[in-house]
Length: 247
Image (tube, rainbow, N blue to C red):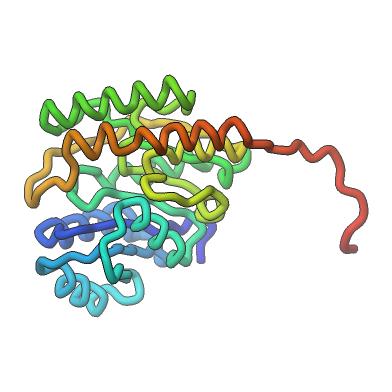
């Protein structure tokens, strides 16, 4: 396992037409890493996705795996499941709809490793030119501004699915439904650093979006207050000295 080897985690629900094109792009961007791992988390798809996942698992073993949820659990749980099943120290997350560009991941990894301690850094994508409907852009803009005002998470685009971070760091964060929207705030709460970098964003070519105005803007209000509560009660100790221990 290489020091910079990455597992790409992709939560997916009924994205059959987008699976192979995205997997091919991931391989083109990161395939030079012999330890590359692509993990799809199938959140109970009822289209042709399971058959495609089975084919890819045979064709790309051991670089591809699919973990299927017995029932639908949502995007955050999909990310959490994928990270838990990852074998590499670094995680990159992507949306399954093909709007995130895997070619951005190597640059984000470089940015991650600029930190003194990359294990305490999250690099978040920043979609400066959104290729979405006006309603989705407006709801996302409002949600980002509300989150920034409450949580001071220093992240202009927390909703971007393209993120790179340490597996160990992620597994120390509190888990709850919809946590993927609050990863920057949770990393800062844990004493880490969040850096945003501009990334490419593409229009959805195939399939149907699973999000609308209601579940983008209003569903996270309770979670927002919950994360603010967690922030107020966080204590990150500064260790002054360790005396003794193993020889």
